[in-house]
Length: 418
Ligand code: CAA
Image (cartoon, rainbow, N blue to C red; front, top):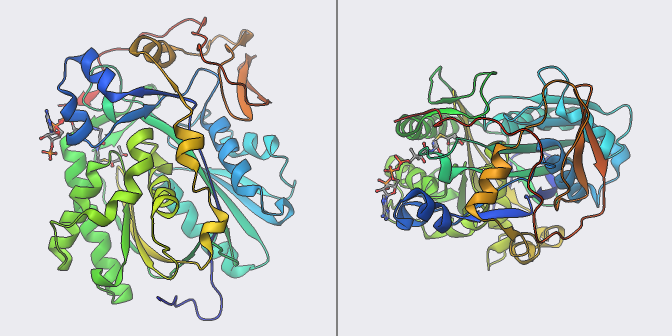
Protein backbone atom coordinates (compact mmCIF):
# COMPACT_ATOMS: atom_id res chain seq x y z
CA UNK A 1 0.00 0.00 0.00
CA UNK A 2 1.51 3.32 -1.11
CA UNK A 3 1.13 6.40 1.06
CA UNK A 4 0.86 9.96 -0.21
CA UNK A 5 3.14 12.78 0.98
CA UNK A 6 0.49 15.48 1.33
CA UNK A 7 1.25 15.86 5.05
CA UNK A 8 -2.13 15.84 6.77
CA UNK A 9 -4.37 16.75 3.87
CA UNK A 10 -5.05 14.73 0.76
CA UNK A 11 -6.28 16.38 -2.42
CA UNK A 12 -7.31 14.70 -5.63
CA UNK A 13 -10.13 13.30 -7.69
CA UNK A 14 -13.40 12.87 -5.81
CA UNK A 15 -15.65 12.09 -8.78
CA UNK A 16 -15.27 11.30 -12.48
CA UNK A 17 -17.69 11.34 -15.40
CA UNK A 18 -17.30 10.59 -19.07
CA UNK A 19 -19.36 11.16 -22.19
CA UNK A 20 -18.81 9.93 -25.73
CA UNK A 21 -20.91 10.60 -28.85
CA UNK A 22 -23.65 8.08 -29.60
CA UNK A 23 -22.22 7.32 -33.07
CA UNK A 24 -19.06 5.59 -34.19
CA UNK A 25 -17.27 4.41 -37.30
CA UNK A 26 -15.44 1.06 -37.31
CA UNK A 27 -11.89 1.68 -38.53
CA UNK A 28 -12.06 -1.50 -40.57
CA UNK A 29 -14.71 0.28 -42.70
CA UNK A 30 -12.57 3.42 -42.95
CA UNK A 31 -9.59 1.32 -44.02
CA UNK A 32 -11.66 -0.30 -46.78
CA UNK A 33 -12.91 3.10 -47.99
CA UNK A 34 -9.41 4.56 -48.04
CA UNK A 35 -7.76 1.51 -49.61
CA UNK A 36 -5.53 0.86 -46.59
CA UNK A 37 -4.74 -2.56 -45.04
CA UNK A 38 -6.92 -2.75 -41.88
CA UNK A 39 -3.92 -3.97 -39.87
CA UNK A 40 -2.38 -0.50 -40.11
CA UNK A 41 -5.26 1.07 -38.17
CA UNK A 42 -6.13 -1.88 -35.91
CA UNK A 43 -2.64 -3.09 -34.95
CA UNK A 44 -0.28 -0.39 -36.23
CA UNK A 45 -2.17 2.46 -34.52
CA UNK A 46 -4.07 0.26 -32.06
CA UNK A 47 -7.44 1.81 -32.90
CA UNK A 48 -10.63 -0.12 -33.54
CA UNK A 49 -13.42 2.49 -33.68
CA UNK A 50 -13.74 6.25 -33.88
CA UNK A 51 -16.34 8.30 -32.00
CA UNK A 52 -18.16 10.71 -34.34
CA UNK A 53 -20.28 13.58 -32.99
CA UNK A 54 -23.53 14.36 -34.85
CA UNK A 55 -24.24 17.98 -35.90
CA UNK A 56 -26.15 18.70 -32.68
CA UNK A 57 -23.24 17.71 -30.44
CA UNK A 58 -20.20 19.86 -29.63
CA UNK A 59 -17.63 20.32 -26.87
CA UNK A 60 -20.20 22.06 -24.67
CA UNK A 61 -22.86 19.34 -24.84
CA UNK A 62 -20.28 16.59 -24.35
CA UNK A 63 -18.75 18.41 -21.37
CA UNK A 64 -22.15 19.09 -19.78
CA UNK A 65 -23.06 15.42 -20.08
CA UNK A 66 -19.77 14.28 -18.54
CA UNK A 67 -20.10 16.85 -15.75
CA UNK A 68 -23.67 15.76 -15.04
CA UNK A 69 -22.36 12.28 -14.28
CA UNK A 70 -19.47 13.53 -12.12
CA UNK A 71 -21.75 15.86 -10.15
CA UNK A 72 -24.44 13.24 -9.50
CA UNK A 73 -22.99 12.59 -6.04
CA UNK A 74 -21.52 16.02 -5.31
CA UNK A 75 -23.23 19.03 -3.72
CA UNK A 76 -23.06 21.59 -6.54
CA UNK A 77 -23.11 24.44 -3.99
CA UNK A 78 -19.55 23.41 -3.07
CA UNK A 79 -18.24 23.99 -6.61
CA UNK A 80 -16.03 27.06 -6.37
CA UNK A 81 -14.60 27.01 -9.89
CA UNK A 82 -15.39 25.43 -13.25
CA UNK A 83 -12.43 25.10 -15.63
CA UNK A 84 -13.08 24.04 -19.22
CA UNK A 85 -10.06 22.61 -21.05
CA UNK A 86 -10.38 22.29 -24.82
CA UNK A 87 -8.58 22.83 -28.08
CA UNK A 88 -11.84 22.72 -30.07
CA UNK A 89 -13.08 26.05 -28.73
CA UNK A 90 -16.35 27.44 -30.11
CA UNK A 91 -15.72 31.12 -29.42
CA UNK A 92 -12.64 33.34 -29.28
CA UNK A 93 -14.01 35.33 -26.40
CA UNK A 94 -16.75 33.69 -24.36
CA UNK A 95 -15.60 30.61 -22.43
CA UNK A 96 -17.35 27.32 -23.19
CA UNK A 97 -17.45 26.96 -19.38
CA UNK A 98 -20.19 29.59 -19.15
CA UNK A 99 -22.57 27.51 -21.26
CA UNK A 100 -21.87 24.47 -19.08
CA UNK A 101 -22.35 26.57 -15.95
CA UNK A 102 -25.80 27.53 -17.28
CA UNK A 103 -26.83 24.05 -18.48
CA UNK A 104 -25.92 22.55 -15.09
CA UNK A 105 -27.28 25.49 -13.10
CA UNK A 106 -24.13 25.86 -11.04
CA UNK A 107 -24.04 28.51 -8.30
CA UNK A 108 -23.61 32.09 -9.48
CA UNK A 109 -20.48 32.54 -7.35
CA UNK A 110 -18.76 29.70 -9.23
CA UNK A 111 -15.93 31.12 -11.38
CA UNK A 112 -16.05 29.70 -14.93
CA UNK A 113 -13.37 29.97 -17.59
CA UNK A 114 -11.52 28.17 -20.36
CA UNK A 115 -7.94 26.90 -20.41
CA UNK A 116 -5.79 26.05 -23.41
CA UNK A 117 -2.52 24.28 -24.04
CA UNK A 118 -3.43 21.60 -26.56
CA UNK A 119 -4.10 18.20 -24.94
CA UNK A 120 -2.31 19.28 -21.74
CA UNK A 121 -4.88 22.01 -20.90
CA UNK A 122 -6.81 19.60 -18.68
CA UNK A 123 -3.67 18.77 -16.72
CA UNK A 124 -2.81 22.46 -16.32
CA UNK A 125 -6.35 22.88 -14.95
CA UNK A 126 -5.79 19.97 -12.59
CA UNK A 127 -2.66 21.51 -11.13
CA UNK A 128 -4.45 24.84 -10.61
CA UNK A 129 -7.39 23.05 -9.02
CA UNK A 130 -5.10 21.33 -6.52
CA UNK A 131 -3.74 24.71 -5.44
CA UNK A 132 -7.25 26.15 -5.00
CA UNK A 133 -8.38 23.19 -2.91
CA UNK A 134 -5.18 23.18 -0.84
CA UNK A 135 -5.87 26.83 0.03
CA UNK A 136 -9.61 26.41 0.70
CA UNK A 137 -10.24 22.73 1.51
CA UNK A 138 -13.99 23.23 1.91
CA UNK A 139 -14.34 24.19 -1.78
CA UNK A 140 -14.31 21.93 -4.85
CA UNK A 141 -13.26 22.47 -8.45
CA UNK A 142 -15.01 21.00 -11.48
CA UNK A 143 -12.74 20.38 -14.48
CA UNK A 144 -14.23 19.46 -17.83
CA UNK A 145 -12.02 18.33 -20.70
CA UNK A 146 -13.84 18.07 -24.00
CA UNK A 147 -12.63 17.83 -27.58
CA UNK A 148 -13.34 16.78 -31.14
CA UNK A 149 -10.18 15.59 -32.92
CA UNK A 150 -10.31 16.53 -36.62
CA UNK A 151 -7.60 16.00 -39.23
CA UNK A 152 -9.53 15.74 -42.51
CA UNK A 153 -10.39 13.04 -45.01
CA UNK A 154 -7.62 10.91 -46.43
CA UNK A 155 -4.94 12.33 -44.15
CA UNK A 156 -2.60 10.16 -42.03
CA UNK A 157 -4.33 11.60 -38.96
CA UNK A 158 -7.86 10.60 -40.08
CA UNK A 159 -7.84 7.17 -38.35
CA UNK A 160 -6.79 8.87 -35.09
CA UNK A 161 -9.81 11.20 -34.98
CA UNK A 162 -12.34 10.85 -32.19
CA UNK A 163 -14.37 12.82 -29.67
CA UNK A 164 -15.30 12.74 -26.02
CA UNK A 165 -15.32 14.48 -22.68
CA UNK A 166 -14.26 13.75 -19.12
CA UNK A 167 -15.29 15.67 -16.00
CA UNK A 168 -13.42 15.57 -12.68
CA UNK A 169 -14.34 16.96 -9.30
CA UNK A 170 -11.18 17.91 -7.41
CA UNK A 171 -11.48 18.18 -3.65
CA UNK A 172 -9.94 17.51 -0.26
CA UNK A 173 -12.01 14.32 -0.06
CA UNK A 174 -10.58 12.35 -2.99
CA UNK A 175 -12.60 9.16 -3.12
CA UNK A 176 -10.93 7.93 -6.34
CA UNK A 177 -7.33 9.15 -6.63
CA UNK A 178 -5.18 11.16 -4.19
CA UNK A 179 -2.69 13.19 -6.20
CA UNK A 180 0.89 13.53 -5.02
CA UNK A 181 2.65 16.91 -4.87
CA UNK A 182 5.67 16.13 -7.06
CA UNK A 183 5.28 17.13 -10.71
CA UNK A 184 7.79 17.01 -13.54
CA UNK A 185 7.00 19.48 -16.31
CA UNK A 186 8.54 20.36 -19.66
CA UNK A 187 7.93 23.16 -22.15
CA UNK A 188 9.53 23.70 -25.57
CA UNK A 189 8.49 25.84 -28.53
CA UNK A 190 7.92 23.29 -31.33
CA UNK A 191 5.54 23.03 -34.32
CA UNK A 192 4.41 19.41 -34.20
CA UNK A 193 0.65 19.97 -34.16
CA UNK A 194 -1.34 23.21 -34.19
CA UNK A 195 -4.54 24.75 -35.54
CA UNK A 196 -4.57 28.35 -36.75
CA UNK A 197 -7.84 30.19 -36.06
CA UNK A 198 -8.89 30.03 -39.72
CA UNK A 199 -8.70 26.21 -40.00
CA UNK A 200 -11.17 23.57 -38.81
CA UNK A 201 -8.61 20.77 -38.98
CA UNK A 202 -5.32 20.49 -37.16
CA UNK A 203 -2.03 20.85 -39.00
CA UNK A 204 0.25 18.06 -37.88
CA UNK A 205 3.75 16.86 -38.59
CA UNK A 206 2.86 13.33 -37.49
CA UNK A 207 6.22 11.58 -37.26
CA UNK A 208 7.83 14.62 -35.65
CA UNK A 209 4.98 14.86 -33.13
CA UNK A 210 5.77 11.33 -31.95
CA UNK A 211 9.44 12.23 -31.48
CA UNK A 212 8.57 15.35 -29.50
CA UNK A 213 6.05 13.41 -27.38
CA UNK A 214 8.79 10.91 -26.44
CA UNK A 215 11.33 13.64 -25.74
CA UNK A 216 8.83 15.51 -23.55
CA UNK A 217 8.12 12.25 -21.68
CA UNK A 218 11.81 11.71 -20.95
CA UNK A 219 12.30 15.33 -19.88
CA UNK A 220 9.27 15.51 -17.59
CA UNK A 221 10.06 12.09 -16.09
CA UNK A 222 13.60 13.24 -15.29
CA UNK A 223 12.20 16.33 -13.61
CA UNK A 224 9.63 14.25 -11.70
CA UNK A 225 12.36 11.89 -10.46
CA UNK A 226 14.47 14.86 -9.33
CA UNK A 227 11.50 16.04 -7.25
CA UNK A 228 10.20 12.73 -5.95
CA UNK A 229 13.24 10.45 -5.88
CA UNK A 230 10.98 7.60 -7.06
CA UNK A 231 11.90 4.82 -9.45
CA UNK A 232 9.68 3.44 -12.19
CA UNK A 233 9.26 0.26 -10.14
CA UNK A 234 7.51 2.33 -7.46
CA UNK A 235 4.65 2.96 -9.92
CA UNK A 236 2.25 0.05 -10.16
CA UNK A 237 0.65 1.23 -13.41
CA UNK A 238 1.17 4.04 -15.89
CA UNK A 239 -1.38 6.01 -17.92
CA UNK A 240 -0.26 8.03 -20.93
CA UNK A 241 -1.80 10.67 -23.15
CA UNK A 242 -3.40 8.60 -25.92
CA UNK A 243 -3.55 10.11 -29.40
CA UNK A 244 -3.84 6.44 -30.47
CA UNK A 245 -3.31 3.48 -28.18
CA UNK A 246 -0.09 2.20 -29.75
CA UNK A 247 1.45 5.49 -28.61
CA UNK A 248 1.22 4.22 -25.03
CA UNK A 249 3.33 1.19 -25.98
CA UNK A 250 5.93 3.44 -27.60
CA UNK A 251 5.88 5.72 -24.54
CA UNK A 252 6.18 2.93 -21.99
CA UNK A 253 8.99 1.25 -23.90
CA UNK A 254 10.82 4.57 -24.14
CA UNK A 255 10.40 5.26 -20.43
CA UNK A 256 11.40 1.73 -19.46
CA UNK A 257 14.65 2.01 -21.42
CA UNK A 258 15.41 5.28 -19.65
CA UNK A 259 14.29 4.24 -16.19
CA UNK A 260 15.46 0.66 -15.99
CA UNK A 261 12.18 -1.18 -16.56
CA UNK A 262 11.47 -4.02 -18.98
CA UNK A 263 10.76 -2.36 -22.35
CA UNK A 264 9.19 -5.56 -23.68
CA UNK A 265 6.50 -5.68 -21.00
CA UNK A 266 3.50 -3.56 -21.91
CA UNK A 267 0.91 -5.95 -20.48
CA UNK A 268 -0.03 -3.68 -17.59
CA UNK A 269 -1.08 -0.96 -20.03
CA UNK A 270 -3.92 -2.99 -21.53
CA UNK A 271 -6.69 -1.93 -19.12
CA UNK A 272 -5.95 1.77 -19.67
CA UNK A 273 -6.30 1.42 -23.46
CA UNK A 274 -9.68 -0.26 -23.77
CA UNK A 275 -11.90 2.85 -23.98
CA UNK A 276 -9.59 4.96 -26.16
CA UNK A 277 -9.29 2.11 -28.65
CA UNK A 278 -13.02 2.53 -29.28
CA UNK A 279 -13.33 6.32 -28.91
CA UNK A 280 -10.24 7.67 -30.65
CA UNK A 281 -8.34 10.76 -29.65
CA UNK A 282 -10.25 13.13 -27.39
CA UNK A 283 -7.27 15.48 -26.93
CA UNK A 284 -7.66 17.11 -23.47
CA UNK A 285 -9.82 14.24 -22.23
CA UNK A 286 -7.66 11.46 -23.60
CA UNK A 287 -5.33 10.82 -20.62
CA UNK A 288 -8.31 10.83 -18.27
CA UNK A 289 -10.34 8.50 -20.51
CA UNK A 290 -7.34 6.18 -20.15
CA UNK A 291 -7.37 6.61 -16.38
CA UNK A 292 -11.09 5.80 -16.23
CA UNK A 293 -10.55 2.81 -18.48
CA UNK A 294 -7.87 1.49 -16.13
CA UNK A 295 -9.91 2.05 -12.97
CA UNK A 296 -13.14 0.65 -14.40
CA UNK A 297 -11.84 -2.36 -16.33
CA UNK A 298 -8.92 -3.68 -14.24
CA UNK A 299 -9.89 -7.10 -12.88
CA UNK A 300 -7.91 -6.59 -9.66
CA UNK A 301 -8.60 -4.04 -6.95
CA UNK A 302 -6.09 -1.21 -7.50
CA UNK A 303 -6.63 0.41 -4.09
CA UNK A 304 -3.36 1.62 -2.62
CA UNK A 305 -1.50 1.39 -5.93
CA UNK A 306 0.52 4.30 -7.27
CA UNK A 307 -0.26 5.40 -10.83
CA UNK A 308 2.20 7.36 -12.96
CA UNK A 309 0.41 9.78 -15.30
CA UNK A 310 1.85 11.43 -18.39
CA UNK A 311 0.12 14.33 -20.08
CA UNK A 312 1.34 15.72 -23.41
CA UNK A 313 0.10 18.82 -25.21
CA UNK A 314 1.61 19.59 -28.60
CA UNK A 315 3.42 22.81 -29.10
CA UNK A 316 4.51 21.73 -26.45
CA UNK A 317 3.98 21.32 -22.72
CA UNK A 318 4.07 18.01 -20.85
CA UNK A 319 3.75 16.82 -17.27
CA UNK A 320 4.53 13.61 -15.40
CA UNK A 321 2.79 13.23 -12.04
CA UNK A 322 1.37 10.53 -9.83
CA UNK A 323 -1.53 9.54 -7.65
CA UNK A 324 -2.50 6.78 -5.24
CA UNK A 325 -5.80 4.93 -5.79
CA UNK A 326 -8.20 5.28 -2.87
CA UNK A 327 -9.72 2.39 -0.99
CA UNK A 328 -13.30 1.77 -2.14
CA UNK A 329 -12.81 3.74 -5.40
CA UNK A 330 -14.83 1.20 -7.37
CA UNK A 331 -18.06 2.23 -5.63
CA UNK A 332 -17.75 5.66 -7.25
CA UNK A 333 -17.22 4.46 -10.84
CA UNK A 334 -19.23 2.72 -13.60
CA UNK A 335 -17.75 -0.73 -14.20
CA UNK A 336 -20.44 -1.46 -16.82
CA UNK A 337 -19.58 1.65 -18.87
CA UNK A 338 -18.40 -0.28 -21.93
CA UNK A 339 -21.69 -2.15 -22.26
CA UNK A 340 -23.82 0.90 -21.42
CA UNK A 341 -22.01 3.73 -23.22
CA UNK A 342 -19.91 2.08 -25.93
CA UNK A 343 -21.69 -1.11 -27.03
CA UNK A 344 -24.99 0.78 -27.44
CA UNK A 345 -23.63 3.41 -29.85
CA UNK A 346 -24.89 3.47 -33.44
CA UNK A 347 -22.60 2.36 -36.21
CA UNK A 348 -22.21 4.88 -39.04
CA UNK A 349 -21.44 4.11 -42.65
CA UNK A 350 -18.44 5.93 -44.11
CA UNK A 351 -20.93 8.03 -46.11
CA UNK A 352 -22.77 9.18 -42.97
CA UNK A 353 -19.52 9.82 -41.11
CA UNK A 354 -18.46 12.08 -43.98
CA UNK A 355 -21.83 13.86 -43.96
CA UNK A 356 -21.61 14.48 -40.19
CA UNK A 357 -18.04 15.65 -40.58
CA UNK A 358 -18.86 18.05 -43.42
CA UNK A 359 -21.74 19.67 -41.58
CA UNK A 360 -21.18 23.25 -40.62
CA UNK A 361 -23.34 25.86 -38.94
CA UNK A 362 -24.26 28.91 -41.01
CA UNK A 363 -21.81 31.77 -40.56
CA UNK A 364 -24.11 34.60 -41.68
CA UNK A 365 -26.15 34.97 -38.49
CA UNK A 366 -29.37 33.48 -39.86
CA UNK A 367 -31.61 31.24 -37.77
CA UNK A 368 -30.82 27.56 -38.20
CA UNK A 369 -32.03 24.45 -36.40
CA UNK A 370 -29.71 21.44 -36.25
CA UNK A 371 -31.17 18.07 -37.24
CA UNK A 372 -32.15 15.97 -34.22
CA UNK A 373 -29.83 13.03 -33.66
CA UNK A 374 -29.22 10.96 -30.59
CA UNK A 375 -27.31 12.88 -27.93
CA UNK A 376 -27.11 12.77 -24.16
CA UNK A 377 -29.08 15.11 -21.92
CA UNK A 378 -27.99 18.26 -23.78
CA UNK A 379 -27.91 19.22 -27.43
CA UNK A 380 -26.90 22.10 -29.65
CA UNK A 381 -30.33 23.01 -31.01
CA UNK A 382 -29.13 25.61 -33.50
CA UNK A 383 -27.80 29.10 -34.01
CA UNK A 384 -29.45 32.49 -34.36
CA UNK A 385 -27.87 35.92 -34.63
CA UNK A 386 -24.42 34.30 -34.31
CA UNK A 387 -25.45 32.82 -30.94
CA UNK A 388 -25.24 29.12 -30.25
CA UNK A 389 -28.43 27.72 -28.73
CA UNK A 390 -28.33 24.78 -26.33
CA UNK A 391 -31.15 22.81 -24.80
CA UNK A 392 -31.65 20.12 -22.19
CA UNK A 393 -33.34 17.03 -23.55
CA UNK A 394 -34.13 13.46 -22.64
CA UNK A 395 -31.83 11.08 -24.53
CA UNK A 396 -33.77 9.57 -27.46
CA UNK A 397 -32.62 6.46 -29.28
CA UNK A 398 -32.42 7.22 -33.00
CA UNK A 399 -31.25 4.35 -35.11
CA UNK A 400 -31.27 6.16 -38.45
CA UNK A 401 -29.20 9.33 -38.12
CA UNK A 402 -30.59 12.53 -39.58
CA UNK A 403 -28.19 13.75 -42.21
CA UNK A 404 -27.41 17.44 -42.06
CA UNK A 405 -29.49 19.87 -44.11
CA UNK A 406 -27.20 22.82 -43.50
CA UNK A 407 -24.77 24.06 -46.13
CA UNK A 408 -21.80 21.77 -46.22
CA UNK A 409 -18.29 23.00 -46.06
CA UNK A 410 -15.55 22.24 -48.50
CA UNK A 411 -13.07 19.86 -46.90
CA UNK A 412 -9.72 19.92 -48.58
CA UNK A 413 -7.13 17.20 -48.64
CA UNK A 414 -6.30 17.89 -45.00
CA UNK A 415 -3.33 19.65 -43.57
CA UNK A 416 -1.01 16.90 -42.50
CA UNK A 417 2.69 17.32 -43.18
CA UNK A 418 3.94 14.01 -44.55
N1 CAA B 1 -0.40 -4.17 -40.31
C1 CAA B 1 0.11 -3.85 -39.10
N2 CAA B 1 0.81 -2.70 -38.86
C2 CAA B 1 0.99 -1.86 -39.90
C3 CAA B 1 0.50 -2.14 -41.19
C4 CAA B 1 -0.22 -3.36 -41.38
N3 CAA B 1 -0.74 -3.69 -42.55
N4 CAA B 1 0.84 -1.10 -42.00
C5 CAA B 1 1.52 -0.22 -41.24
N5 CAA B 1 1.61 -0.68 -39.98
C6 CAA B 1 2.23 -0.01 -38.81
C7 CAA B 1 3.49 0.73 -39.12
O1 CAA B 1 4.62 -0.13 -39.13
C8 CAA B 1 3.53 1.73 -37.98
O2 CAA B 1 3.95 1.09 -36.80
P1 CAA B 1 5.25 1.64 -35.99
O3 CAA B 1 4.85 3.01 -35.52
O4 CAA B 1 5.41 0.67 -34.88
O5 CAA B 1 6.37 1.72 -36.95
C9 CAA B 1 2.06 2.05 -37.76
O6 CAA B 1 1.32 1.02 -38.42
C10 CAA B 1 1.64 3.38 -38.37
O7 CAA B 1 2.05 3.40 -39.70
P2 CAA B 1 2.76 4.70 -40.30
O8 CAA B 1 3.80 5.21 -39.34
O9 CAA B 1 3.16 4.44 -41.70
O10 CAA B 1 1.49 5.68 -40.28
P3 CAA B 1 1.32 7.12 -40.86
O11 CAA B 1 2.63 7.77 -41.08
O12 CAA B 1 0.39 7.07 -42.01
O13 CAA B 1 0.55 7.86 -39.69
C11 CAA B 1 0.69 9.01 -37.58
C12 CAA B 1 0.83 7.66 -38.31
C13 CAA B 1 1.86 9.90 -37.95
C14 CAA B 1 0.64 8.76 -36.10
C15 CAA B 1 -0.64 9.68 -38.06
O14 CAA B 1 -1.75 8.90 -37.70
C16 CAA B 1 -0.84 11.07 -37.50
O15 CAA B 1 -0.32 12.05 -38.02
N6 CAA B 1 -1.64 11.19 -36.39
C17 CAA B 1 -1.94 12.47 -35.78
C18 CAA B 1 -0.78 13.00 -34.93
C19 CAA B 1 -0.56 12.20 -33.67
O16 CAA B 1 -1.42 11.49 -33.19
N7 CAA B 1 0.64 12.35 -33.10
C20 CAA B 1 0.96 11.70 -31.84
C21 CAA B 1 1.90 12.51 -30.97
S1 CAA B 1 1.29 14.20 -30.80
C22 CAA B 1 0.10 14.08 -29.55
O17 CAA B 1 0.03 13.12 -28.84
C23 CAA B 1 -0.86 15.23 -29.40
C24 CAA B 1 -2.16 14.83 -29.97
O18 CAA B 1 -3.05 14.35 -29.29
C25 CAA B 1 -2.35 15.02 -31.43
